[in-house]
Length: 202
Image 1 (tube, rainbow, N blue to C red):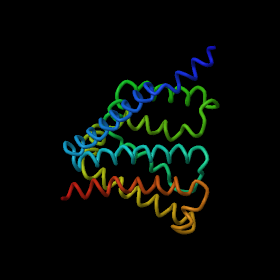
Image 2: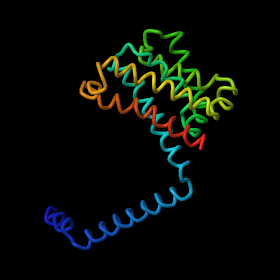
Image 3: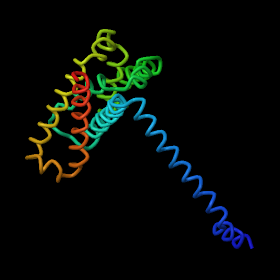
């Protein structure tokens, strides 16, 4: 009897109509949000979106390198890239009390429990320490200028050419295991600074 009620409820046309109308309202709301954001932000919205994408691509590549994508490239350059490209909301969160606690725990683990501190945590620990202890000249003055964008561009170009060279060519960089995700991640590292520099000098 309970099974029949369940089946009857699932095939009820009134319920399906309600769900369809809710989905249509969500679509309309999403379109309005996109239109309003593009009107308000314009090119600046694209820059901040690309900044988020580039930061997460750098974090993804850093995690990937520390876990299963061992290369001879200087992937430690991703740490200053993340430092300079991290969106302001995340940067301020990690530079505040949250970052201080994370850095404190990382230092204590590294000093007193070195066997329990895995190798793959070295770079993220360095990033947190850099975020917390960087002087204001780097954290605010340099980070908010076009110099930081230029540094990000140089890091992205260097990593892309090293990745292509290690893969044996541009075409091969897409055909190896994890090739597409790695190459696209590195390309995202270049797209943000190029876009930001073009907008800065226009």
